[in-house]
Image 1 (tube, rainbow, N blue to C red):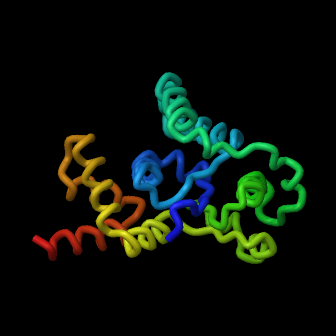
Image 2: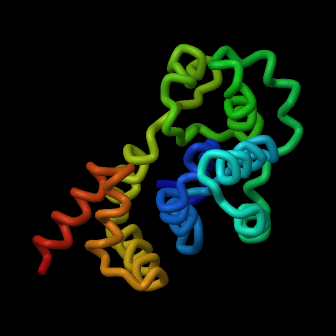
Length: 186
């Protein structure tokens, strides 16, 4: 696995705090990949936080500021000329254009239907569900992934098991696999 492997995180992934938190931890040193997003993806994330998830404006702004400050290299610009050339779902063409411009080979999204393989193939980009990618990262370096999960659990003051239960709502196969491995090692 290349630690410089660029991955675009769609707004639906960034808006899911539990999944996003783990993915961003895995992008911190020792990083397993490089995250990428655009202003448009961040604005869509903020709208989801405010309108669909009921976050307070202060919290949504703080989240946006943290993304921009902690991962300044993740922001992709100047991709607008590619949007009209993209053949995926019109509302998500900006995400594919961001991936193309940043030379990302992967888009992580919960909305797989908006990124059909036929529309991505000409650009050598693939869309994957976050669970599939986390399983890949876990298979490559389980020690780092488990360490990051434990770090998040400590920060939230919950047990690893409780944290995996929460993650299991969105990543059931991943959470079950990690829990099985942890349980077997005890």
